Structures are given as C-alpha cells and as structure tokens.
Image (cartoon, rainbow, N blue to C red; front, side):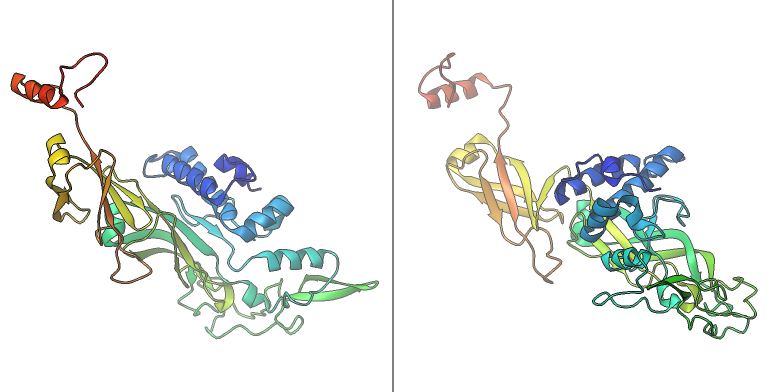
Length: 375
C-alpha cells in the first residue's frame, strides 16, 4: 500500500504547489543515492519521495487521492509504491494513461455498469497494456542550465522481445485475437438488471490467444534489458521542469505501445548568481569612492564574459544596475535572454591608515563620536 504522500513530503493537505515542490526538492536532495551510497533505507526513502511527488504534483492524481485514498491507484493507476521498480537507484514507475476517466470508469464498473457516455469505452485489452511510464530526477548546476547539457541515464526495464517483435508468438507474428472475448479481455454475465464483467477465462484477460509462445519471452512479448539514454537538457531549463521522452518508457505487452520516460529537472542554487525567472542577480562589492564619485566596475557574467559596467555618482548600497540580455536563455524564445542585475554592496574596511581616517573625518565634517558616524 502506498504511504500517505502528504506525510511523506511533510506538507499539509491544503499545501500549495510551490510548498509541495519545495518540500520535494529538499527531501530528494537529502535521500539521493549519490549522497547515500549503499544506504538501502535512504534509497527506499528516495523512492517514497518521488512516488509522493508524482501524485501531488498532478492535479488529477491529487484530487483522486484526496477523494479515494490508496484505492484511487489500486491495480497500478498512479505512482507505484516502489515494488517491482525496474531501477536500482532512485527511479519510480507509474501507469501510463491512467487518469480521472479511468478511476471513474472503474468505480462505475464496480456497480455493474459497462461504461458510460463522455468517458469512452474500455477498448481492447492490448490497448490497456501500454507500457509503464518511467520517471527520473536529474540535478544540474545553474551553469549547465545556462548552456544546456546532456545527461546519460543507465537503467534496466522491459523492452520489446527481439525474437518475436514484441508479439509473444513463436513465429513473431501478431497474436490472434481471443475468439471468446473479441480482444477485450473481459466477458459479461447478467445478474438481474446489471451486467457484470470478469476477466476472460480463455485468454486470462490478455485479449490474445497464443497457441505457441515465444521461447525467449515466454509469450509476454517483453524481456528485461539494460538500457542507456542520452537526455538533452535544453539551455534555459527552469528548476522543476519536466521533460518527456515519448516512447522511451517500458515496452507494452503483446506489441502494445511503449510508455514514456519523464525527467524532472532540479537546478541547484548557485553560490554567486540568484535566478529570478530568466533574469540573474549578482551581488558586487563596490568601493565607497566609486559609489560617491561614479566610475566603472568589472563584472564577470555566468558565461565568464568580463563586463565593464558604469556606476553613476551617488549610487546607493542595495541599488540594482541592469545589463540587458546577460541573464538566462529563454527556452520559449530562441535567441532571447533575460537581464543581469548587479546588486550594489560595499565592504567596510576594518583597517585604515591615519591619512585615510583624517580624510573620512574631514568628509563627515566632524570627528567620529558615539552619536554620529562617518557618513
């Protein structure tokens, strides 16, 4: 049974999306396998955090959980609890294509209804056996987010059997449709006014009737295999963004489509630059004389370009000077960049020569006292 996702992330049931994302990022960094090598407890915690976030970040899944609890994801709808997870370190899987329509349809089926308008019919069993979606979390630096980067993911998952082309048959041809259920995987029986559905006993609910199974996959159409995917992370990617690799999830049963592969991006805070949207803020210490008289300062940008920035006379501490187009790339508009804001700061010297002290006292118009400072 899945653990309460609110308790796993340590948030209230009315927590905002921002609070949920903040809690997730904090916990995923704490329990990441790279920071806890060989720690099975941390690994399980990492899976629980990913599964909890997978439910709460999705409005449909969250609403389903709030209404039905764990029953909303019974049978694979929603995030898995980590059991059967094909990854050895920090990945989680969740059923592809499951949403509120599926939950409501299953609820109605429990009352004996075969389906109802607006939500569509079930379709064939093969269509229901689409491969699982897979999820990974990737942590990158702000500099990598600026330039874009490629991340290599190594994992194991089900792939289509190469001997039978994913069909599960000995001759590699598509498996024949079950004659009893017509490929739906279910048969109906009348109980009074209602029609009750049960898995087809002829094909065990698969919708296919295979007379001779593939010797390599034993008729499943899939085999477990080590895989490597190179993920291109675009320049300007935002913290919390989710990338989707269509068809790169687990292979479906009996030739059904593969699921998708999702990558959640976490951008680490930078020790120099603060990111606000596509803009960057950098704090720079400026001498008092430059602030008072005006002048120029050298500022290094995130791409290591050296800029000479003019500081107007009388600039105050805390003021921000804007340099257009020197922020982060805008992933929505190619060739567009945010701005760089230089936040003015000043370091007060702790050791002054007598000459410097005299100059400052003259500037202040009086000698320093407890009631008045230099400025």
